[in-house]
Length: 437
Ligand SMILES: NC(=O)C1=CN([C@@H]2O[C@H](COP(=O)(O)OP(=O)(O)OC[C@H]3O[C@@H](n4cnc5c(N)ncnc54)[C@H](O)[C@@H]3O)[C@@H](O)[C@H]2O)C=CC1
Ligand SMILES: N[C@@H](CC=O)C(=O)O
Ligand code: NA
Image (cartoon, rainbow, N blue to C red):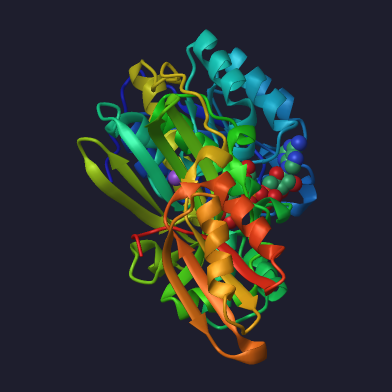
């Protein structure tokens, strides 16, 4: 291969912070694709150093590149800092230092961006430096660049999808093989999908951070992790999965970001929770650690993005894509897009967000049960889409699927129903997404 380098091009020197699941693959790809990367960037892309905690554990990295002094590496003669340590500190301080020193930054750290994005973008702007983070949401899937750049001329109204590989891996197993929750989480950890602390996945924090990033880009509004309504999958039971199957549905952990007007004006709502979706829905076929995200925009209509959302190599692919972009910017001059938060829309609380519920009840088998339950729905102004009464005696059950209503009204309805003497147990309550029943 003849590599065309710009005659004056100096190597682009890269500092890598962290060398775990993702970092190891970044090192491998940088080495294996060195010639192609140089040709694409117009200058060699050179690994200047790798900051790690325990150098003796990293046999795949040339010893002379390893250091435990991440701050010192950033302060040395480097152009780009790639952060794949994860967590808030020391990543936050290191990246702020890097940006303030004019280094371009590439990060996969959604937790950091969702909590301290504003501060990082401000530092990037002040220094005229690049801040890229495609790997932070939906791993290998090109999703943030399309939102930030390709769709910048459109008005996005909705982003909805599966953005956490670990929980999708677990839910797919529960629905498919019926494998146990603990076993499947262990497997997801072994495969490099789970966060260092997997409760971030299971309790929905990881998906909530990603939802905040997606909503911020889609709606030109600063949304932080704290603005996102969050429920994880810990409470999803085998009974919920079975109830979904009975209805021709499956359970997925969804991130849903919407821009809508109501009586109080235009607002965004951002939520992460398990939901039943029809098996015919395209998201129902997204299994294992795969992710898929729908984007709806006024002019573009509906778009779907699909691919590997977790794992070392897929995530490293997104990191390398960003690295090429920032390296090109350095070689050719110029920089990528800045933060765009001009719309500054309020975030609507979950209680006011319209949702739909599937409720499965274990009820007494006697006349008047249905009318007592229906009266509670009417009292809360919640309209019923489907009701199904099954079984007799001790096995009597009632399944209700509602039409759309404010989430707070649906919750109060469930609370009141749970207290009715004719209701023996609320077996399963889950939100429903997809087509109207
Ligand atoms: N694993 C995945 O599938 C994906 C991970 N990410 C994100 O990428 C980042 C890295 O994830 P993984 O590689 O999976 O994590 P990991 O836990 O495998 O690797 C992180 C590495 O950073 C090292 N480290 C911790 N503190 C350090 C410090 N002060 N200086 C230098 N090294 C330090 C750790 O020893 C570890 O080797 C996280 O922000 C994660 O959320 C994003 C998308 C997918
Ligand atoms: N833990 C995350 C990794 C990718 O972001 C996930 O499971 O999706
Ligand atoms: Na991505």
